[in-house]
Length: 504
Image 1 (tube, rainbow, N blue to C red):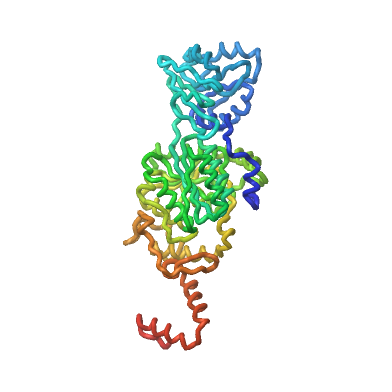
Image 2 (cartoon, rainbow, N blue to C red):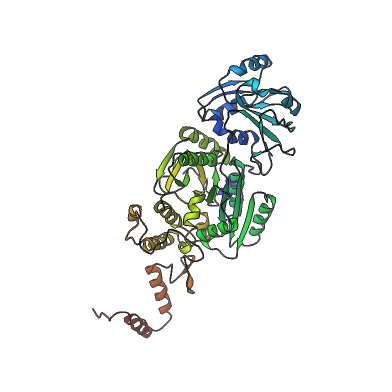
C-alpha cells in the first residue's frame, strides 16, 4: 500500500500556505514549453530544465558563469527558442529574462529574438505602450495566479512579446464538502489553490460540522477570502447534498469554465491540476466533448488506480509522483467511469445535467449516477494519465462508524432501481435514459424524502426512499420484537389488502 494510514500527519510535513515561486511561474508558462526548443540559463537552470524537459522538444541550459555572460547575450538571438534568460544584478536565474525595472525599460526585447518572455522581480517594470509587450503580474501570497496588467504591489511580472501564444488557463470554481476532517479539507484547498496556475475559487461546505472544528474552517475562509468561501449546513446531507449546497453557494456558473468537485481527504501532486487542465483543453480543441476528467490515484477503485511506490511523507509523494508524471504526462485514456474523489466537470455539462442526486445519502454511487447522466447527454469521460492525486480513502465513513458494505449494497440497489436495470454490470450498456428518468437533476425536486428516517448500520437513512429491502425487513422485525406475536396479524392483514393471501 503506497499511502499513509493517517492524512493529517502526512499533510503537516508540507507548508501549503504559500506557493513555490519558481514552480508556480514555470507551471503558468507550461504551454510555452510544449514541443518547443528552450534555452535556459541561471543559478536554478537545472531545476528549470528538469521541469521544461517534461514537455519541450529540446533543452539548452547554461549554469551561472561570468565567462558565459557576453557569449550568451551575443548568441541568444540565434537560438531557436521561445524562452530566453539573462542576468539580474549579478545573479543568474531561470528560463526567462530577469531584469530590474530600469533595465527592462531600456531593453530592446526584440533584439533578443522575434518572440519571448521577460520575467521581472522585486521592482515593477515601466510600461511602454509602444513596445508591444503585454505584462502580467503575480503576488507570491494569495491570490497567486498571474493576471494581466502591471500591479505595482505584486512580486513578479512577466512580459510577452512577438508571435507568442500567451498562456490562458481555464477559470475554475470548486466544491469540497467536509464533515469532521477539517485539517484535511484545509490542506486540500491550500494545495489546489497553490498548484493550479489559473484563477480558482473554492467553496468549503461544512456538512454538519460541529464546533470547534467549524471555527477552523471559518478562520481559513477569512484568511483566504480572496478565493475561499464557506457554506455551513446544520446537518450532514451526505456528499451529494454537500456538493449541491456548494454549487448553490457559487451561484451563476457562467463566469467559470470548469467546476471541480473533490473529496476532502486528498492532496494533489504539484502538476496534477495543470495536467488535468491541459488534457481537458486538448480534448475540447479536438471536438471530443470532454465532460468529466479525473486523475489517477494511489487509493481508488477501478482503472484510475496506479502504483507509484511506497512513500511516507508529502515530499516523498511529490518526488515519486513527479517521476510517474514524467512517464505519463500528456496522455489520456477514455473511460466509462471516473470516480468521485476528484471530478473536473465542464461547466456546460453542469448547466445541462445539474447537480448530484441526493438519494444516495452520505455517499457511494452518486458519482456513477453523474457519470452515466454525462455520457447519456453526449459527453465523454477521460482519465488524465499523468495527473496523480494522493487519497487517504473513506475517511468520512470511518469517522462516522458507518457499515461500508451495507452502504454499498443499499446504494447499488437504489442505482439499479433508478436506471431500471437488474444488475450493476448492465449500466455501461445503457444508450438512453429509461422512460421517466431525467438526465437533469434539480436537487430541490429530484428527491423527496419521507418523514420516516432512522439510523441503520451507523447511517441516517429514509425507510421509504432509501432503505434496502433487507434493511427495511430488519427494521420491521426489530420493531415487532417489542410486541406480542399476535401483532403479526395486523401486518398480515395490512399486506393482504394489496393482494390475496397466499396460504401456500
